[in-house]
Amino acid sequence: MRLARRPATNAEWLAFMHAGGYEEPSLWDEAGWRWRRRHGVVHPATWACHAGGRYTWLGPEGPQPLAPQAPVTGISHHEAQAFSRWAGARLPTEPEWEAACRGGLLDGVGGAWEWTATPLHPYPGFQAFPYAGYSVPWFDGGHWVARGASPLTEPSVRRPSFRNFFEAHVRHCFAGVRLAWEGG
Image 1 (tube, rainbow, N blue to C red):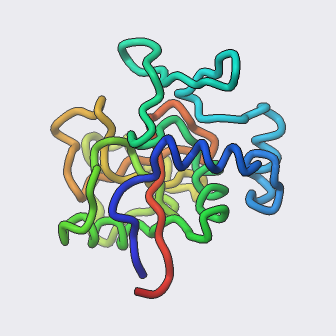
Image 2: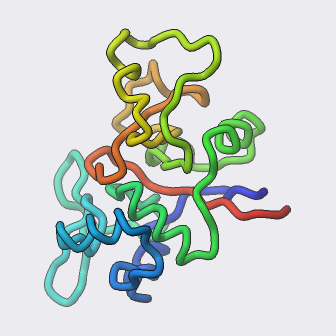
Image 3: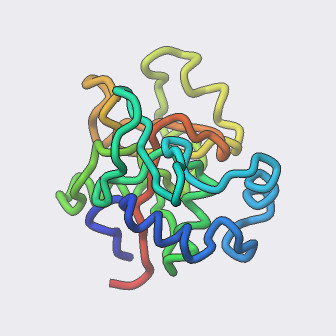
């Protein structure tokens, strides 16, 4: 197994879009395709499209030029899976991501929450943090783990072991994607 050194960039996401990634059902699982069609999703939630197909990034300071080499943000788990399939890759599992991060193999951690292929579940010996209701109600198979952090993340949770989690359709959380491939 091999993980990308850095998260997918805005330029790579534009290539996915220009290749018809949002229009190709074979890249999406059934739930993701249904969600994409129902909501008319055609680009990341943190992007705005302008005349001539120009995009801006909608960050905390308002619209900014789309930086090609910045990590893509504002994508759902559904979108991350479709992009991974388009790239001939997959999402990393949560243990793969953490091992690579702890091993110093990942650049760009903290530029976007990074979706994993792992549904939220308790670890052996689980103890709730930061409070009891934070994760326990969400061990339902419908929430997916995101690792890393975004530029807006509180310092106290910026560590390789912290698990964030969202439902597959969530796009507001400054999440992106890092690809994984089988083999070395």
